[in-house]
Length: 533
Ligand code: HEM
Image (tube, rainbow, N blue to C red; front, top):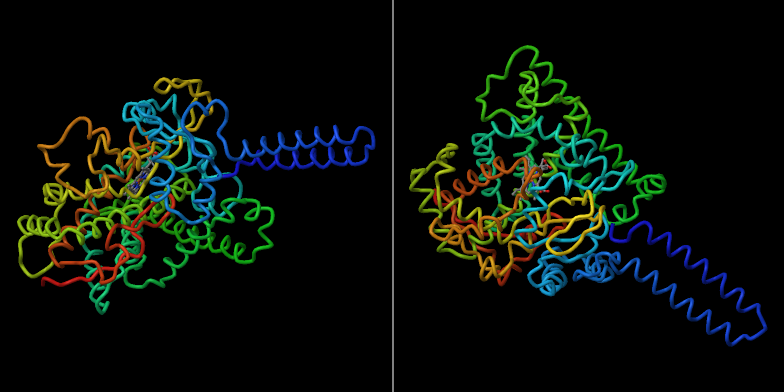
């Protein structure tokens, strides 16, 4: 939370004390002037203490450069995205840290040390025992946010409880590579693009593509978000997600719990949540029953995650999850998997529209691998992995405009030195992916889109450890390979079929304009498509 709960308590106590003091001073007739001076000084001191609690980090962290929290609150209320906040506030703080590569600011879990130095990042990500995931990073209680990011799940638990979820899903993520599912959804996207007269709002369309992709690949349910933006599933999910991250309820969770009855729309959303959960529960129950009848005959790589998880559980391979736990993980996959991939793709469309030579080079490669006949070709897994330039474009997009700007927060398990700085037990630490991937020492001209950085001859160990769009260590993105497959299939098919350009008068003409808070992507990106066949 941007304003920690204990700050509120301190403000209340301080206000009470100041009122009591004034009351005593004003009633006292003796030596009034001296008493007024003392009262004034006491008030100033208390006000400073209140300011310090809200605006400044704990004393133990003040040896690192930090960002005054009032500035963070202000920029957040203004609706600045992390992309803008980084340029305005965090990059200057980081610049003050010189070689250290650490700065402090208030984030979702309170005051955090943000780390950008690759060597320190390695320590944070690889020493899981010392830097376990922070508990309750999405708050506690019966809020809509906790109804969506459900406990216990792969996204929420630290330690052994998390391991159980990761173990249950690892075999499934290892096997799933559903290029045909993705390819057929890309064909639905073609239909949607051609329904538009001229200008296509591609970022919204890709979000709907991402939703169909994760419901199909997650539990064999095509929500048909591409075909029908008002479909029941899409509306339900969008309302719930917007509601869960609504700033008012995010900042003051009591409005969503104790005082929910004062907000009828909120009450409705909680009922909608039950309906949404019920739909996925039904799918799980049906799939468990199907498994008792025999294995799915679908090709292993095209099976959905839920089926694969149940099958590996039956084989004693993954760990065993209750229906509730499995449900929580499936919802986690939707939340973690749909916006991220959609925004990455949207950014790729932007950079390819801005640089026609790169777009053409990518097209030439897709034609070389998939042919130039006038019909759609869904690449095989092997073909999609083999296209070197496609992979360079994807990697560079994830560097320059990676949708996940930070890793999940970790909490220091005992007093620990990070670099030359002692972090007390309980300090929160976050890897600043955005800062790392825009460090000019590691990535010259960091805001320039240049896939050649990833050409084999330009590879270096320095950049290998500085490309972390999926995080790293034990919590590295579980869906990384699935997301990469989705991006390869979509981009290779799209570039074979269309040429595209920014829409006339696009606000993105000079520079990409981002939207989003934790997950970012181009804001309302509009493109003009020209069909090649
Ligand atoms: C471009 C697309 C994606 C990006 C950039 C991305 C990025 C990330 C990042 C940065 C983390 C946190 C890592 C950490 O804390 O160290 C993460 C975790 C996670 N992601 Fe992704 N992700 C993407 C797509 C997906 C997809 C498609 C899925 C599911 C199908 C998925 C599922 C998860 C899960 C389950 C976790 C938690 C892993 C754990 O703690 O064990 N992500 N992702």
